Amino acid sequence: MTGPSAWHPAGVRGIRTVWQGLTGDLSAAATAARRAWAGPSRERDLVLQALKAALAAWVAWAVAGWWLQAPVAFVAPWVAVVLVESTVYRSLTHGLQQLAAIAVGTIVATVVGLLLPHTEAAMAVVLPVVLLLGQWRRLGSQGIYAATGALFTLTAGPVSVVTSAARLGEALFGAVVGLAVNALIRPPLYLRDARALLQDAADETHDILQQVAEGLAAGRFDPDEVNGWHDRALRLHPLVEQAKAAVGWNRESLRINHRHRPRAVPQPGRGYDDAVTVLEYAAVHTAGVTRTVLETVSDDEATRLEPGLARHYARYLGLTAHALRLYSNSRFGPAAEDGLRDAVHDMRETLRTLRQDLVRTSSDDPAGIAVYGALLAQAHRLARQMVLSAN
Figure 1 (cartoon, rainbow, N blue to C red):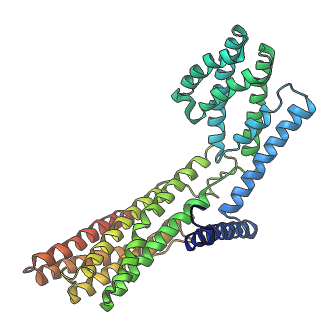
Figure 2: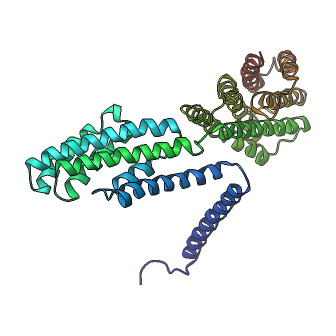
Figure 3: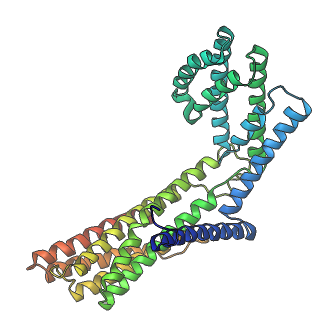
């Protein structure tokens, strides 16, 4: 008997890992189901989109397959279900591209299939051609449907002009059904996603900066705790990237969308774009600060933060965290808050004082100047961005 037994410690660990992964997935699914049931959420949006896709397929089949008894009726629900896209605009653009790709593949396959009666020979000629045509940039991501259309034409019975024309007509009908269902029945909007992700990124940045400030002010430099700060700071950038993507999705979802009402739905314009820019700077600044602090506590020979400067810098980080909280509320929170300009002014004044203290305290210590200079550089960049955004 070769290999470890299932009850070998390594096998037990493997089973345990698989079981933990399965239970984690089930728990996540249950959480998502509760959120979808509880109220408006991203999870509920996903459920509704799935139901809309199923409805589009059912309608397309009921008309083409059951009522009209079309010869290749399966094409209509197939096209309908894949065109219930994440935005109405994407349904329209992808629908046009997909119809063009299917038409290209169907026409080429029909012509070659009529000239070459053997399916194998026709496929050998058609597939390389349509796969190359599918790379045409105007077909975008839908180019692969040129090959799909060609395969359906060559493998779904005898090739004929009538059958190919019916296939194209049913594809057009399915596209119309999919687009209509997506556009008329609660067309998707992503404002909630964009606002929630921006708020999450701002809150996480605020919490990290506040914890670092409290640690510096108390002179608490536990390596494990500082390493935790830095790990969280490194995860800020992906979070901000998700927020940026959500802003783009939201902007696209407002196009050709009857649910869009300028007075009822805030525009994902300059306010959201500015928020993404500020949060990008804040993510870089926070990662730089936590990295510098981590280097000073993890290396026994590294220059330690001078207590007075550490307290001053802690005050600056606290003011930065407060200004970010005010900024996030003024841009995409439930209500705008006053005091952002004052908070940014306090940041700049504290930064000026910190710069003066640095010159007085560490002028004879090159290593200290390097450490504090790195901290000041990060602080200066973020303060400048906050000043621009507050205006």
